[in-house]
Image 1 (tube, rainbow, N blue to C red):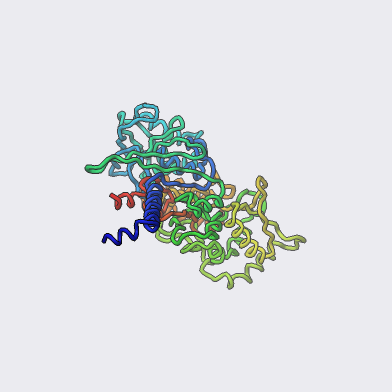
Image 2: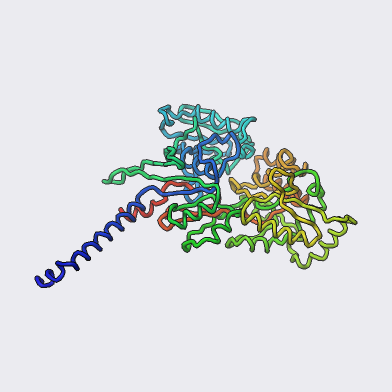
Length: 498
């Protein structure tokens, strides 16, 4: 034993000790990175807490509000409802009253959180001057009242079983004087937001603090590069428009994740004049789209083409309305489509020009190229609409805020859509006033049929939402609303370490 110790007491011993010290430093740095703040990047601009009544929120604003300015309820990682500002709630047997009991707490600055303030803030989102994009979804709300300092009631004119899903959306987060009630506290740190949350102490343990560094970048290129380089552990806010950037990167296996969302993904008339105003032409263009080829070109696993406005899996929707022609292969229809196009075009010296507004990015170019191929085969010319210039059609890519069919169909009501069907509006209004779920679903089914036959929308598939997730971010989960809480992102790792 003595001889062995002497043999390693010289240069070799120094090498071994140096290697052990280096390994200790490496392990220490890895642990510091794992136990420190989770770095999250959202694709988009405007990382700031804003009042949702001011207008449409950007993706970074949605993530920030959901995590630093919660509403009465919020989404967990799986997209289920969990307590937010309200610690519990009750729904009346007739579904016309939702009563929420608020947690005890204070707004940043020390003012006590009271039901009177919360009711006022919610009413502001629904008032006539509000530009909250989800305002219309609350059409059945009759009154929002504070019953005591900690109890608030939302009274409805008709049952709305999806009310909690809507209240959990960032558009109904509660922002007061540019600040919110959590679950994270948010402080600006140069170009990012430092989010912190105190965690309860486990039995016999010490309290801990959960930290997230939240940043935003206008382009997907920078976000993907930061992920590949290890400078960010979670990228949120990806859409079909910028998916090509992620697909073209050298990503770790399993890091590209897709949310199984429902929503609208297709073409809508952008104005009530020009080619979009011709119902016969709209129907022809709709039938000429090779949905299978377009979906394949987008490169999204398990994405299915669809020709219905409503999506399978919505509450109360047994079978969305699909036109009969959609069951016939496009190749078998093409000859008839070309003949119809020649009849519509007549003796025009130049091909009909159709201008389409698509999002910038690889996905928008794929859509545009597919339309050029499909509509070009009919003799039409397709060009992108210049920014600020009139478009005939625009591409819609929107995730549904709840599993109710109402949001899908009311997107095309005459109040907001340049091309609409008045009789469908009447059906949607009747559905809004009905207290019977069966009757409401019947109104929805007929409204979808009328809207689809009038080609007020050319559906392609479900929306595409993607994220990049580092292996250390074990608390992340895909969900049907593509809303991702930043709480507990390393919760499972922490549990194993303890």
